[in-house]
Every structure is written in C-alpha cells, then in structure tokens.
Image (tube, rainbow, N blue to C red; front, side, top):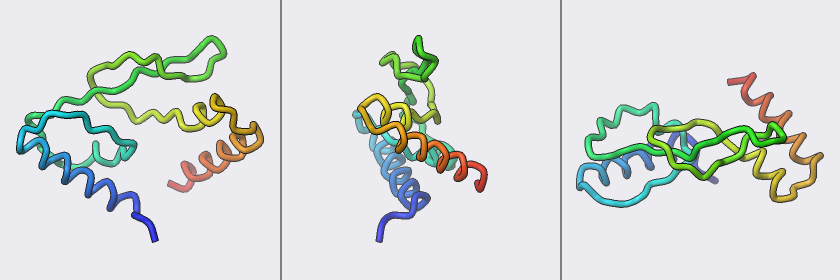
Length: 104
C-alpha cells in the first residue's frame, strides 16, 4: 500500500512546521500542493517557486528563474514529452488528467 496524498501532505506539512519552529535553514521542495491549503502559521519560512512561461512553441517551460511566492502549476506532462516519452502515452496521460480534473 502507498501513502494517500492528503496524508502525505499532512506529514510533509508537520515536518515543515517543525523546521520553521526550530528556525532550520534549508530548502524544502515538494509537489504536494495541498500543503499550501493547511493552516501552518509559518513565521520563519519564505516561499519561492520556479517561473514558468510559454516557449516559442507555446508549450509551458521552466525558465529557471526563482521568484518569490508559490506555484501550483505542474510541468509533468510537458517534461514527459521533453524527455522523449512517446507522444501517444503523453496524449493519453493528458486525457486521463482532464478526466481526473472533471471528477474533482
């Protein structure tokens, strides 16, 4: 069995709160966007994200610029395509993702 996403986000958020409380210095990176919705009351933590912008082909890509703030934008499907995953698999994943969003 695996970790249910909301439980994983809750564990990660509790760790982040602990790191904030002890004033640890470091980088905490996650794809668990649900953390942003939890009432953490972080006083010593700053949020940064990677900028994403459309490339010449219109596909969103990371610019590698670090900006203040948070982002909920995923580049998973674009990255899969960029690293050479077959087009039919990426397109099927896009359709499945659309269905997941419709059901949410």
